[in-house]
Image (cartoon, rainbow, N blue to C red; front, side):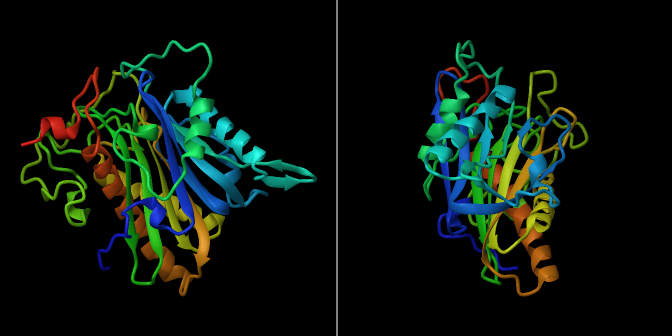
Length: 332
């Protein structure tokens, strides 16, 4: 499979998709929204032991509602689920949503990560995440910030800051696949105490430093973790313009988890709420439903691994950080 990114190397290389971020510096948290001009098909797969979700049950292939209006990734643990409420309110005001008689009900599944112990001010009187969700939706565009932005604003890993990452892949079939991820893992995206990324074999160009794979792997069987330091979770969206139904989207999300396991060690732990949404705009038909979905799944996993490394690589240093970012620790 020829390695070629989309023009922006973002999930929004999938035509019709837009992403928006909202951050609160004092809170050290934020939200990220993916939406499109029209409803899109979505699926989900959860492999972590501690998920926090909204409206994921309706994404099962046998459910009545087959499409969604937006997907939300947020910090804030359970409080962050309210980000989807802010998105739903704004979409309803815009006339978007599933039609029930003369009422429109926006369908906005979401997932959260735990960033409540990252040093930010968390003594709010009114939950701030509803506002952050609405602000992120209003900011939706083809281009958006990575690193310490949106749902990745306050994300941490075992030894480094996490962040928000994205990547894309254009397949020989003409289909585009992209990934968007907020990395707040229990484990690590880098090998031992060095700068090399576990995802290095899948890097295209120098999108996360071009260092190549590590030559030694340290205590691979006992990797560093932030076990006991609070909460974790890596939450992601993979998307394509391939015409997929809900069952196929669910399979795409399931396959994409391989990318998480390739890029984070360990992943899918009992203390992570690791989750992947999959989205399809349906713009391009499948020539071969079996072969094409196999390749789409592989591409989604590869994109997600690369997006995870980019999230960490692009994280920025901020005053009051309790962990360094990759560029601070490995600037030389």
